[in-house]
Image (tube, rainbow, N blue to C red; front, side, top):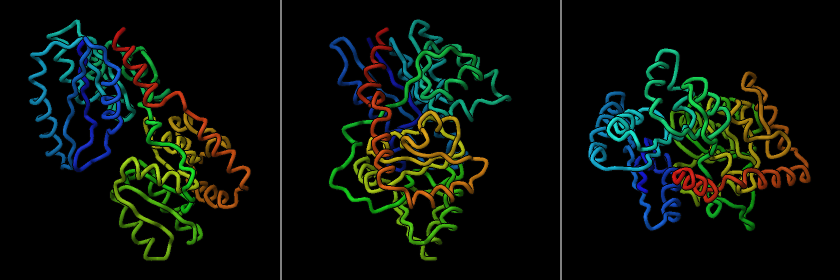
Length: 342
């Protein structure tokens, strides 16, 4: 059996951890292959570009894919539906017996498929043989927007050998945010809450993006914020372990892997109450949610958690650690290899 993984999400020098989960899956899957099985990877190179630069990037990816039209694969696994569904659609025209699997990560169907382009997207999706949405809300959108049956709901998986509780690490931050400093991530909600809280509350903010000047301004005003750039997975594990709570106040997500990474480290999480997060966060068990329609409640929640009894916090830590043990990287890849073989 010959397998080809196709993805528009993959680490690059500019985006070192964008799509790292695809790289992790690819490497883990290689360890599971039998002698008569091979796995090949095709990924689109990720760079920061303008709109025209992005168009050129996609065109370049389509040309780079051309050699694969002269190779016969039994299975193609596409990560993120659009736009690389176009190259795999054409591949299926020449090799109709090849099975096409698509992992839907959230924004590729939640945001990119809309009323205006639904018919075209449904046309492209007819070549798909098996769908893998990463969460229940994503699965709902795949069914409703693309009219496709759900093959298997399966998150991308977290490497339990990388993310785990560090017994000798001290909690030096009250709250940790990891991600892009953009509006979709609810960073503006977080900034507004910080402004209303005690300046002594310690925040660690890791990532980069358009709101970085806002954080820098808060630091100058005396707020206890430590800004960090892109982190390695080992550095992230250490940050999760150093923080009492992980916070992700997003307006929209797929199935956020960072939440599971934090939980694998025993760090309770705080999120907005969007449906995707409600699949992951159970109030008073492994974290807390606040209403997206009333973001001022985030400020109240953060303030109240500063006085949480130690016994209640220990229960949250245990709840986080015991959540999602069944979606480790190893477990997910074992599922994937069986899907390929079937």
